[in-house]
Length: 47
Ligand SMILES: [Zn+2]
Image 1 (cartoon, rainbow, N blue to C red):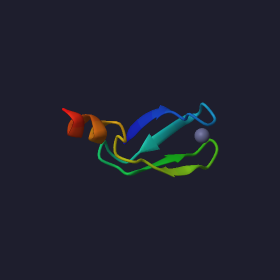
Image 2 (image 1 turned 120 degrees about the vertical axis):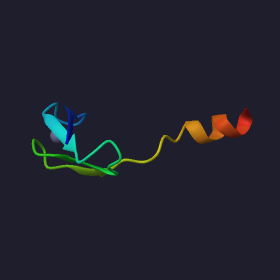
Image 3 (image 1 turned 60 degrees about the vertical axis):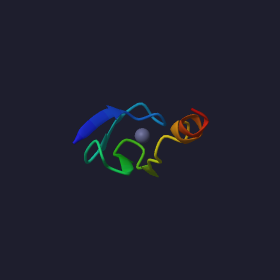
Image 4 (image 1 turned 180 degrees about the vertical axis):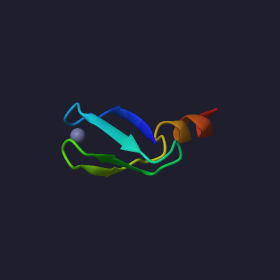
């Protein structure tokens, strides 16, 4: 488990692992998919 402050409610939220693709917050009940870094791809293409 990896815990961090939920960006929606500030309560501790967690992901199952560093490779998880979903975050779950017990504070506000949100479940959000984590997308791969959307900024890295165009930068990599431009380089
Ligand atoms: Zn939350």
